[in-house]
Length: 315
Image (cartoon, rainbow, N blue to C red):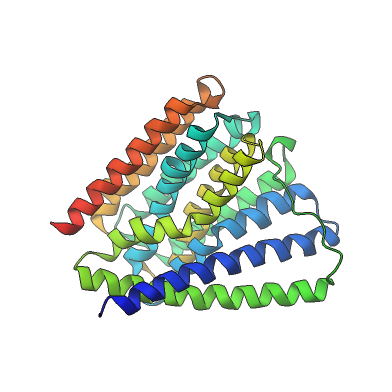
């Protein structure tokens, strides 16, 4: 019975987290569109931020409550899930075309950002200074893609809804942010209680359950892209999300509270996301697409990695 309440809390937290993140993205996009902001900025910054909002709020809340390993595990695990599971499933359903901008700019940037996060964490801590460095890099990245944007990087933007005023949409954004904070607290509390009950580390819970849950927006967006016959949007969205996760999610967690990085994250989990990033680049360069066979390879890696983590948890 003890685990029932934390489990229900996690489920409710996930539900509110996804709903509020979706509301935030939609209403922020509406405000930006009505204010004359370019579709590119909306796609890369607002929607990119929105899909990473669950990871950011959960990691910030975890760091604030002294659960640094949960914050780090969430960020790393989400990037692993995005590449291995989300791209794997999407490619299995329909081969994913790779746009020139993604191939020449976004994929190399993702690898550089992943390497930077690993380097900063290599001393076993993500300090306030590390957080400042990551956030400066995030601002630099956003400035770069904003000033020298490529049309290939644009995302689909929701149609303008004329039934609501900007003030109403602004209020929805405020409500969504409040719910994001509240649901993050619920999720972190439930996850920590489950980890303690099962006798596993916060890092393992962050890498598995929390990472999968906070990656649901990316999975939903990519499956929607496949269903609408726009598979070329999938890879760009995931790469952008992973850059946000490495810079913003870890950066915010470090700014909120100096975060200890488990040695296993440095020697096991960072290498996995690094290798997956290289593998994705190799797949993308061969034939300018990620084919079904390559998607199956990514899925096999994901399930093998999850099985290994589960095995560690039960030993």
